Amino acid sequence: MEYKEHKMGTYTLHTIKTDKFKLCHMEIIFRNNLNTEEITMRNVLFDLLTESNKNYPTKRDLALKLEELYNAFYYSVNNKLGNGMITNLCMDFLNPKYTEKAALEEAISMPFDMIFNPLARSKEFDPRTVSLVKDRIAADIKSVKESPKKYALIEALKSLGDKTPSSVSGMGNLEDLEVITPSSLYKYYEKVLKHDHVDIYIIGDLNMNEVVKIISNHAQFKVIKEKKLDLYVKNNKTPTKIVKDKFIYVQTNIVLILHLNNLTEYEKKYVAYVYNIILGGGSLETKLYKALRGENSLCYNVGSMYQKYDGLILINTAIDINAREKAIKLIKGSIKDMTNKITEEELEAAQMTVISSLSMSMDNIGRIVDNYFYHHVSDLDDFETRLKIFKKVSIEDIYKFAKKVGISTIYALEGCDPDA
Image: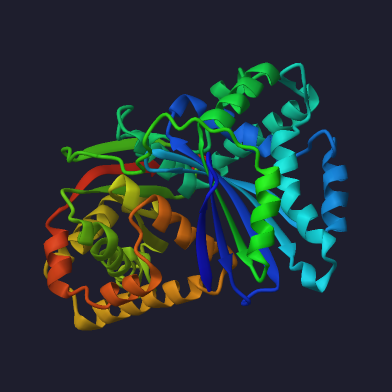
């Protein structure tokens, strides 16, 4: 695998040459510091930029063109990550050596055509297309309540307060969606093109000198980088807050938010991952799973997620309406066990899980790009370094880390009997 970074003036191009895949994959990645007032607008904009443009004025026109390109796939992914907004415009296409040489430039140029030649007139996006996208996003936002786990996590994070980006949902909200107009969306489009940092990644078995020339002809970015970008959020330790809401679910959903205080770089990048896998982020042998399901049959599933850039761990489970207090007690007990009751078997199993996940990432074309991207924009170490250091994490490291873990919020989305 041969990686090269090309400084292209206002953007950076990253080429990754490999013969592991028949597919080629390109990502145009926009990133900026989080602006909570723009999350909904951003979701609408980038959905719109995969819907149509002047050359493909309908979704059907676009689909037919992608079919001509041997079933290429063009899509967007929006993420709120810590203090950052990151949007990936992605293009998957078959390596032209299996089709025809002309297909290379057509496939590479198409996403740039979608970006720079939108379906707009007089600095307004096409009203019908904007309406279609807004309706689709409104449906997505409303559907959150149909997923108790997702809804509980969103509501629990709100308890962190307005002063931290960690409390904000990346889905946006209906109030902001309602006021978006074709002209206000176009103004935001111009702002993004002018001020977002842009990186372009392309991976595949390609002549990368030719690829660089093609992209330089089509990527007409003129970015003014005004701000330094930092994904990390500083969430200070707070007294434990207990929050209860009610909703018509047949179970009670519980979320515990754990603050991670004053972590070292080593703890942040390595120990926290191993800690989380042993606690609740790994197999059916995690402490949370054994305590709540294996030994007490309180739930079908329980898990934990490490949010590196927010400095948080989120624990989530759904239990019987009358089992809330017992479940919370058992979760607290599992967290306490992380301070002095970890076995060598648990540590080795967690390390094997991490190493297996890392190894699998090198067989996935999109995750390879992710690895290079976060190495470039953040503090992610290279693959070999991570493999080496994860193997060195010790039980003593985890015990030391566990002393820096505190419960910030205990949130219960209490279910009730709809027929009661």
